[in-house]
Amino acid sequence: MKSIDSIPTSKVKRAGKLVTTGAKVGINYLKYYGEKLVKSESAAKLNLNKNNAEDIYSGLKQLKGSALKVAQMLSMEKSLLPQAYVDKFSLAQFSVPPLSPPLVIKTFKKYFGNHPNQIFDKFDSSSVNAASIGQVHIAELKGKKLAVKIQYPGVADSIKSDLSLVKPIAIKMFNIKGKDSDKYFQEVEDKLVEETNYDLEISQSKEIAQSCIHIPNLLFPEYYDDYSSDRIITMDFMKGEHLSVFTKYNTDKKKSNQLGQALWDFYMFQIHTLKKVHADPHPGNFLVNEDTQLIALDFGCMKSIPNNFYTPYFELSNVNTINDPVSFKKKLYELEILTPNDTKEELAFFTNMFHELLSVFTLPFHNEIFDFSNPEFFNKIGELSESYSKNTELRKFNANRGSKHFIYINRTFFGLYSLMFDLKASNVKINQFKNY
Image (cartoon, rainbow, N blue to C red; front, side, top):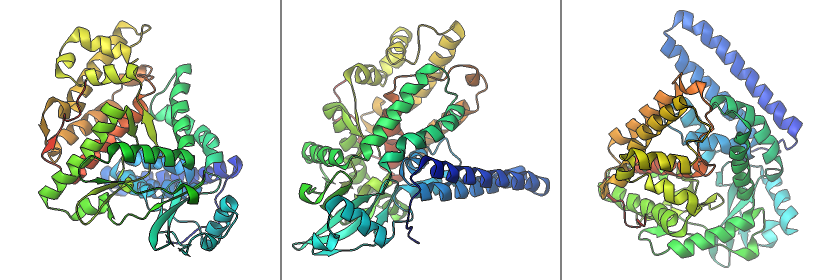
């Protein structure tokens, strides 16, 4: 993959890149209208999605940073996006054009004052893995193989301007109205800023590793403060293959169940015991080693779960609450899904909507053992998402629904369910850490 020598960092240059990308999308639509005359509409739409996904991803991968991070987040929404977008945007998880070796050396000198070869016994200036915010290099020191993650120049400084460019698109896509929408964008901005703070990531990584090391078949790298900074992280090199690679060929149910149980226990222990969770569950953040153990990486995106959100959120996973209209509606108010200003029409619509959604979304918690390999559960979620995305009645209402904490907690569960389905884990014990 060809490396790049610079990244647009100014607001003007980054906006210009998005304008260029927008022009390409416009041309794709012109082609689409022409193709509809000679092809079936479904074939023409398939080409449109493929071309748009290619051009949008091409533009975002040159910007890197939060613009590319948004694409990575969207790639997990398999039930909301056309498959062409999911396939292309998922590359943002671990496969984007890396920085050129000279730019890597320049960045390293900026934060350490020395060439990496003056710090490590060996350092490979060509990356082995490049994602949205940083890329990874292999180094050696005193016989130990290390992974050195270097953040792309300018990423931290461009978050606010990137989100200001994305905001109008998000408002239109998700039908967001009213002044309260700022709390959602602020939540995303705060998390993206945290992800660029590598000092914070190291402390979070150590905390989670220490707290979760007792979970069977789960491993973590060791982190090294002396060879890290607020923009560079040095950790153990962990040998394994990305979870997405493993799931493509694995047919061994025992391995699927072992990894699925480790993954599920990892998340449930964090959520129910630590009240803090790794809120970026995509395949690029997990490796599988030759002993079928799960290796968890990248703790830049951690979401703390306050009790006043945790309690009603998980009470809604209880089938008795879901089936009790009074209790159910009370929890919807506590979670800001229903508001005192709602009309009778809004109250009825959103109560019914969330009852239907939660009756499906919480199904794993209604069982002691759950089969994530059954496509019926995952398909139900997809069908409901698609149904409401096309619902004309929903478009009439203000879609500012729910606490700001929903953004990353729901993202965590959607991502976790997706990984469990990809693993085809079929015999997962659900409530080992239940305390609600």
